[in-house]
Image 1 (cartoon, rainbow, N blue to C red):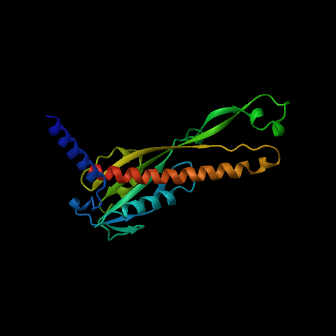
Image 2 (cartoon, one colour):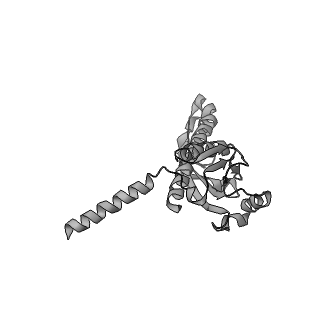
Image 3 (spheres, helix red, strand yellow):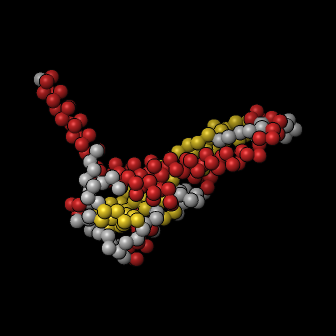
Length: 216
């Protein structure tokens, strides 16, 4: 009995591994041999995220054999992948401060002892979401509908092969420097945020790949 259970377990693991590592075109069963990948729409409160999200997704999708990828809008492609990046309405809900510290303890020389005690965040959590739609040759009206609030609720049926929303989070530690080095703090934190956005782009591409593999 134990031998039978072990064989079944090995079979399940091998099948799941094959599923995850699949490299053939997952859209072929729907008659999609070519896919257009235009720049993702950025409806978030963070600038300069579209290019990295689009680039990382293109890199991962290029690993599917038998799927011809076309960068940008292409009317000749069988289907289009539309990506829409969103965030909470308020920037304070998109970049959420955490790990609060007493400012006087972080930079005592610059802040001094005369000011009332206040707190500064030791880290920031970034919250974004990405809606991904794969649709066969959409019209302008269909694209407008997909970009609306209703678009996230449209089921995958008919021309729409895939419509999922991924929620993404990434945290980064903030830099605190004292004395003359305080002038580079803003630059350091801007760089940390930029790296976090790049990491989110990679995470998003991996989620797209995994969801497509299991959806099809």
